[in-house]
Image (tube, rainbow, N blue to C red):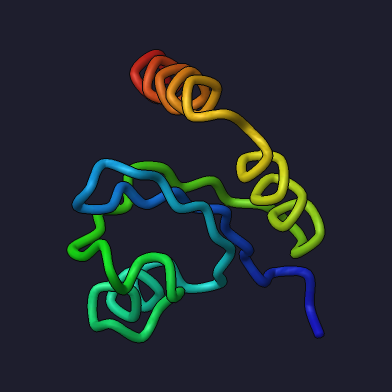
Length: 92
């Protein structure tokens, strides 16, 4: 298996305003799965969901660590993380 596989950590904003963090190798397919009711149990009751953050990693472990770290944050910390991501994207 080559090292050209891409791994992603993503954040969805659900219809109730809550956030869901996850891991995937195919962000478009994963978002379609969530919005088709085939994603995580958490998101099924909170559709539609919008992908508001996406980070690419070189290996699965890094992406899963990012997901784990995000899930441990408080709501306020998640909002700060997402706001910082927007600022970084605008400055690129």
